[in-house]
Image (tube, rainbow, N blue to C red; front, side, top):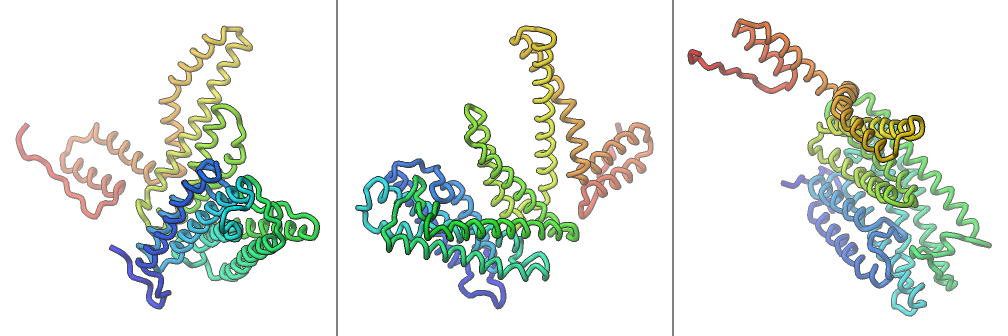
Length: 408
């Protein structure tokens, strides 16, 4: 069942419009595989924009939000960002195929250069998505003053990239790098050096604005409660995961198996950001965030502790005690395995106490009830105690206890 457009809202903001725009984005993404083959590049390469899997995730999220909540501008922002990223990636592949492989002989190469800076409005959309989460309004009235300057700056940046690209085409300075980016746009020199400085300033201001948007949501979290608080938890969790993924992606040059692990973790962190935003907006399984946070933090701590214990035991056995490396590795592995279960219980209990307090309190209630049950002899007392514990731990709408009347 789809939601009706908000009263007084934009008339075109409807499920039909979401279907049309979603179809256009699908067409843009479907063009990426043949264009990547034409450019002799991997479909997973970032080119001048975001790789296809990330565009797909954002497109799916944007379409679902725009379809179910057409009055919420976030769905359109997310879907638009996915479209810009897909368009930019298509243009990047085609620009490489035309200007690097076929020396400008393919048709409409200039159009690829014009549309390739589509990553600019796509990136600028992220700050708006964070600031307007989850209902399309800033976290407080005082943050509205930052909304329009941010939009103006983003439009100025995108318009500058477009104008500079048009000037480069007119002057036949159409060299591109392996990602399909104009060389004069990426490395401006001479009379165009001002654009490099301006673009660096734009990036800095946009980054500061994005961080400020996230800070505004974090400050509103302290004053929030109930459903709104859970939504902000999802946003902050996704932002932390996305930041971790970005930092890990900067380490993708690590050689060997660790490099693959880092790339996988970085990709998972980046994908977690739109997923968390979607859960927060759509309020799907909203109250599971505490359990996810506690389990993620718990297993991260356990993994770090076990790796530290394992490495310490190996170094102790080989460097201090002089054992053979094979025996040291085997003994350290057995010790780490034996420590896993008791360490997991202690760490998870401590993490639940901080990040999943409801679960921690419920476990304490159940343990206390089990202790009282061992000494209870009166059936009515046990029944009343059981109903009290269930009501406090699970908060059901109604509690009924049925006791069999058959003789034992």
